[in-house]
Length: 119
Image (cartoon, rainbow, N blue to C red; front, side):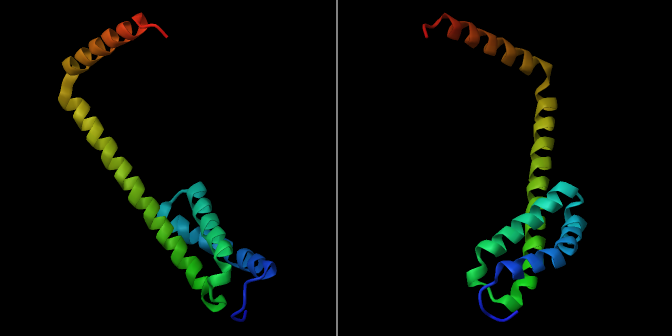
């Protein structure tokens, strides 16, 4: 490939040649089939939309770097979700049953008051 714009045929060739490698590369990070497919598809979509600004001889590197970065971003988000869930569970345990009974009672009172209101 030269340094001119990537053609549809060039892109299709890149996709056929690198999709599987990129999928397994992503899978090594995220260990999830669908997420790996999504990451690779997203990176290819970005390459396609940015093809006019890319240097053809650097696209393969961009594909691998893009997949690595997207995989790491996914892992960061998952870690944050897990930490938040753990925090919520810990908070629930610390607050105890009495807190939740009080909250349930308050919600019931608010619901009754709302039901008394006109539409």
